[in-house]
Amino acid sequence: MTDWRLSGFADEAYTALGEQLIFLAGLGIERIEFRHFERAGKRCSISESTSTERRRLGRQLRNADISCRCVATPVGKAPVDGDFSIQQKQLANGLAAAMEFDCPTVRIFGFQARSAGDHPECVGNLSRLCEQALRDAPGVTLLLENERDVFGETPEQILAALDLVGAENLGFVCDPANFAAVGVDPPAAVRQLCDHIAAVHVKDRGKDDDMVLPGQGQCNWPQILADLGGRHRAMDLALEPHLDVAERHFGNTTPSGFAAAKDALEAILAGID
Image 1 (cartoon, rainbow, N blue to C red):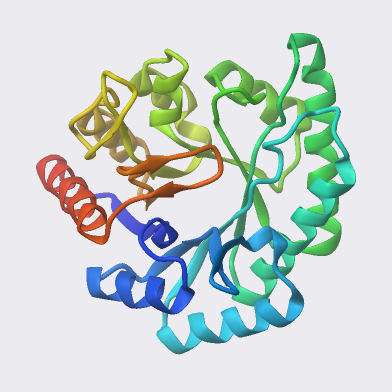
Image 2 (cartoon, rainbow, N blue to C red):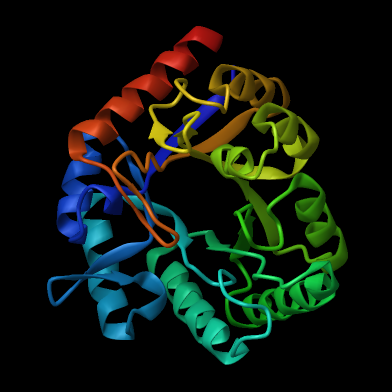
């Protein structure tokens, strides 16, 4: 039987970390996908955090007995020909957060290419990020996420990135709904990439490009989870429902909607185990 390990992007429901942690604990989820926190009443990316803020946030995590599964940065969700120093600074903050939170992974993206001719430059940028991570946080793995309109939006591009970068500290986090967004069959993509998947983001895309509860959309979550369960002894499942807002850098879901997404996922898991 597969050990399905749940975590959640609680910033979809609440901005302040304290509220995120109380919310997750109430759902029985012991791990967080750390993407945003509150600064002066506004949402702030962990990639923009200061050292003082990271120490405070780390204390909150430890006091709540909630562990950080992944520091979810927007690094690489930017033009490949843009100012790379900005991406390096954001990654530096993400890596520092991972070290402060005793977190093993940092999420990144593959850069926005103008055409296939830019893909070698995308690979070069990813290689430089991996070198930075190996130097500054040698115990942390960078997880490349598939995303629409960036290098890595198809299974073939993910495989190319992993192969061409060839870094031991680069892994893959799979978002089946993002594959559906670019016309790729999610179960087929999961089967093609299964041996490379370190974690999975759980949301579902409806026929009209809206977001729906897991199992109610295009992703075919029962098939995906059955395939993963047949190949992995353990798998990280990160709830990211995006039920109310699905923007490029964040999503919003009401607390009740988030709880419903968790219930829907657990019902699917109960049916395949």
